[in-house]
Image (cartoon, rainbow, N blue to C red; front, side, top):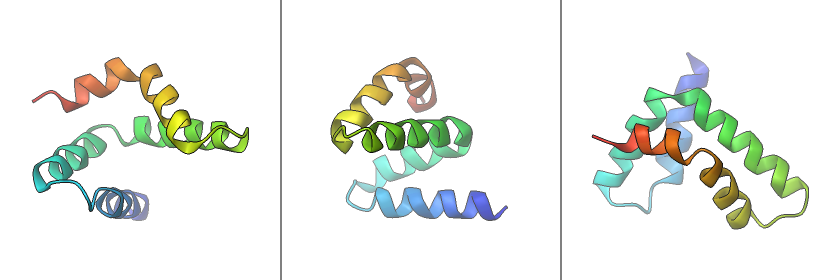
Length: 75
């Protein structure tokens, strides 16, 4: 319960610079599969701790989960 609340708040905070439509799309995707997004965040964090810049770490991990993410973002 608290975990879901904090996850939603993190998405809201992290997407504040996106257009409303994209914010909603991201929020919906996270609600559909929060465990995938937790896994992605943990893997990005591991790569960052190994010295990789955050942007490159995120791109590498997103490529790894590209098919799963595409499935979540399809309408």
